[in-house]
Length: 80
Image 1: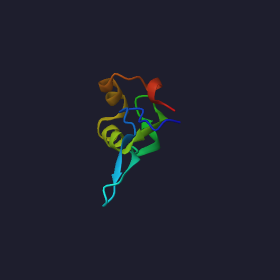
Image 2: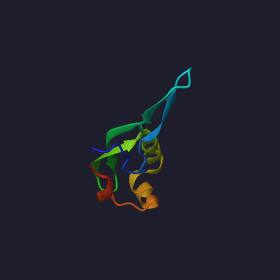
Image 3: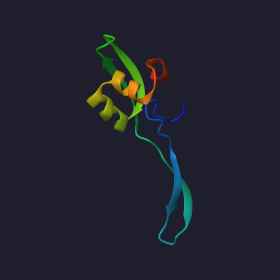
Image 4: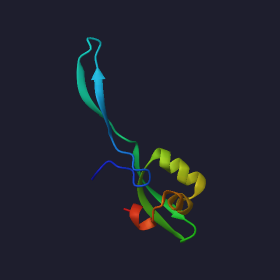
């Protein structure tokens, strides 16, 4: 399963760990993904999503369906 936020599209970033001696080793910075059940009052049901905590805060503030409309997504695109 890919580590990608269904709402924002955030993916892992690649970079280097740099030691004091300036040795470089590759590393990945993973998005903070969570599986959540979100209640959608317009549909009167719960929806399961895999989203970042940043997207969760935005959905909590705006609501899931208005946020999806703003992003140009459908509910079927983001549900697990």
